[in-house]
Length: 280
Image 1: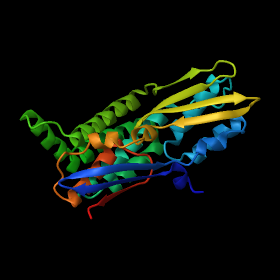
Image 2 (image 1 turned 120 degrees about the vertical axis):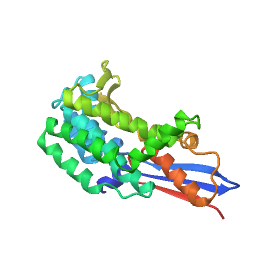
Image 3 (image 1 turned 45 degrees about the vertical axis):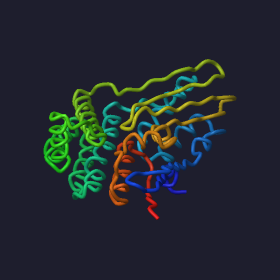
Image 4 (image 1 turned 180 degrees about the vertical axis):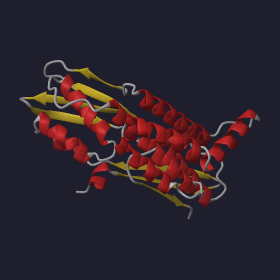
């Protein structure tokens, strides 16, 4: 099984009629990867995490390590904060430079993103400098910057809020905050809970999409239970969050599909996704 298929898939469908979307359905399929950790020794389970979760592998590994430590099995060493900040920035910039330009009809900033990724090998300070440069001269000076400027004008003249504008502004601010934290080498948000003898222990780590939780229980020196609660699982548990991010009026099926894809991107799934509109 490939690492891509291990992540799962997301399919969002709806029916367009009378200027709006109806029968909105969310189908998130997640293979029971955590179940494969049951029966392993703590060391074996920890080693599997970056193999099973190539996306946000640093955060996944750290959440598992923290949970095991809380359960009385301190293994490995903490992931360096700057590497977690770098991984968080990677996910934010991937969306802003590659996916959002595509849905807006602009050319993705593929070369700029690739150049930024290469800076990760040069260490924390070089990456912080590259992130500031990228944000100011490629993100804010590009198509997204123009969109944000127009949305800000709309807000000032009282034309109401826009979930796309609010979501993009929040992501840009998250990049600013993460970049500042990276430059200052601040501790990355993470922690653990529980750990009573024979009970459940939890490790959590901040990610670009929200808090990632690993919950587990050990028995007889092996993993008796392991649960992973990722932001994608919460955001796409049903269609409620998507519905809140859709305009009330959608004049035609083409615009309806585009609006639905924008809503999916705002919720930012960590799995491959597809959007289908029925207007028969």
